[in-house]
Amino acid sequence: EAGPDRSKKLVALHKQIASIMIERFSNAGEAIKSYEAILDLEPDNREAIKVLKDIYDQRRDYDSFVAISEREIGLISDDKQRFKRLVELAKLASEKLRKPQTPIALWERVLETEPTHKEALTELENWFEREKNWERLVDILERRIALEKDVPSQVNLLDKLGMVASARLGDAE
Image (cartoon, rainbow, N blue to C red; front, side):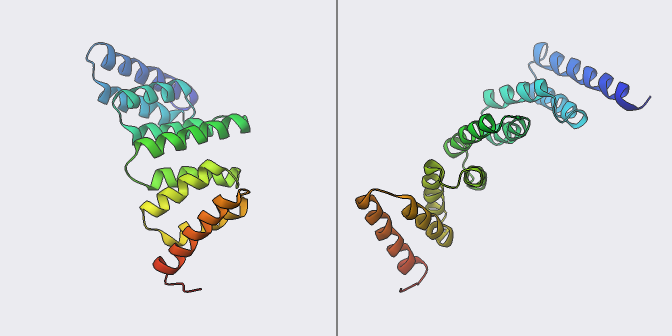
């Protein structure tokens, strides 16, 4: 048997296995495998995505939670809603994840959509400073300075930019 019928039967079977694993055996690990198999068959299966998000959240597996949430965001057709969820996910990634790559990538996606997003610029400034990525930090500081209307804040940012440029990049300009 091939085609969509076989696929639907496999999805139903995996769903059944997953619910048995959770309800009878409290085995979230095996349930995850079944829900991931469902997503291999039906990449936009919202029920599987929702259950996986719940399981990952309960297990505090935030790397997996963020990954499945990104997949879910990709399914949102409304641009404003998708952007709102992306910002929420970037915030969560900044709070919960230890590795910088994911929060940085999410905040950069926020900036791709809205280049003047203040929170994204501030978060990226913090991440790049923490990671000692001086060139990227300079870029973000320059963008923040260009957007800043408050003169004392602009002066503080210029001061920081000057320190980073001279001390970290060896740029004596």
